Amino acid sequence: MRSWVAAVADVVCVLVFVVIGRASHQEGDALLGILTTAWPFLGGLAVGWLAARAWRAPYAVAPAGVIVWLATLVGGMLLRVASGQGTAPAFIIVAAVFLAVFLLGWRLLALLARRVRSA
Image (tube, rainbow, N blue to C red; front, side):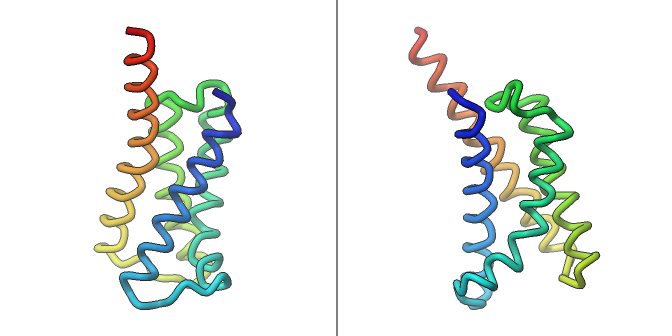
């Protein structure tokens, strides 16, 4: 599959994280609110793609997926701090788990699907 599909899947994962998080705090789904919450994580995601050169093996869980996940989490939190948004410890834990499950999870499912197809 093409790397742009993987990039879109990663962006969708981050947006799902943001939308679910905002809904769980009754912050609504206004587009501006979603973008305000999402941009730090999307920035971290972009840094992760560049650092991992993820376009070379975008479906690999390691190292690409792990680097993308960590950069999305750490970069997102650093950008949130820089922009005056919150980074409570509970939020960091929830973000780490959610982003790991989604950013690594779809890659694991793609790997499984490939193995099933080739078997």
